[in-house]
Figure 1 (cartoon, rainbow, N blue to C red):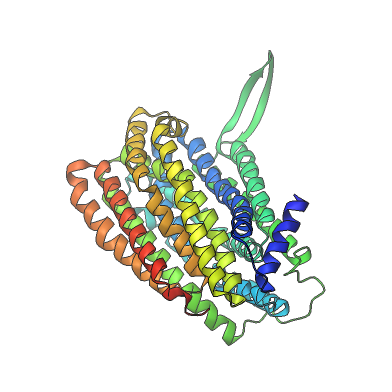
Figure 2: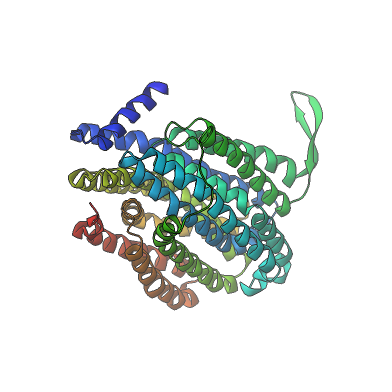
Length: 473
């Protein structure tokens, strides 16, 4: 792994130092950054998959309780990502330009700014947790568990924010391995904590030997606590590594202010605010989708939530490649290398489309097995399999929008993608879903999603081709 990391650092240094790079070197660097980033993204969704599978064994109502508020948790999650990205993109530009002291100064300021932001977000989340299930139209039988799950999620938002910030800073510096390993560790911790917190104490029999496995029996509450605890532990590990071990960004022994400056905050807002608005737009649409799905019944709510989680296994490689695209494009722009910027943009987008196209084929073929691992309820399985097979056809174009967005973020051009997402989701997806759901049920909702993702991928490819996002190079 050390040899691999050294080779990656040499290639990244070639960007910053203005050295020529062959197509083979560009492909090699893209793969070296993408693979650990994909592992990190997959580990994140595997953790959600674990939660869904464990809670699924508690019954349809427990699954529906988490599914009801899942879109709102993604909204808050996305706002934390946007806040972190507003600073990490500045850092990757400074590293690309060789300004390491400037990069560290932005990092110090980002810790203070994002911590304050996440604390305010936590206060908001806990305040609305009691009313949220009612606002979303959830059945009375699942409101208590849904409210409790979101309350615990909100309490741990500062830890989640630090997780995103530390991991994002390391990735933008070119270190994909440590966030990847941290993601795997978080999955393992999540399994352990969930195992102990969700289920009650029980007798196990192995090779004729009986023993008691301890458990708190907290159900949905245990799922929330287990996941949040795993995230908090990993956030501490990533912050420690960033502070003491990162070659480019370590702050140990450094002198400097943690008070955010007006210039840094202004740049962070220019980058992060459109991203935050975009997450509000997307998750707002997802919440509206939940409102459309909720009248279809508990089985439909649970199946919709499970299918979204299962599909994430397919599109997380796209987000991993998008992380690599942000780093490569950001450092190339910081170094003022226009041709290299264009080349990395095209390589990453086409790589993402190829990988996610293959994942779509696998998702279509193995949909029954994927959903079957998450729930034993036949009605939920049938609906979930249907949803995955409809969505499989959209994966290549979905990849185009995901990775192209990562390219635009690396270029600090986030306003136009925000507007494109707003139009695509609200004008295409929601209108189609509202039109088709009354006659086709959950299938109509997922057909609308498939059509919209194909449309979104097309307009992102057009925007990538026009290259207005390269105006800063």
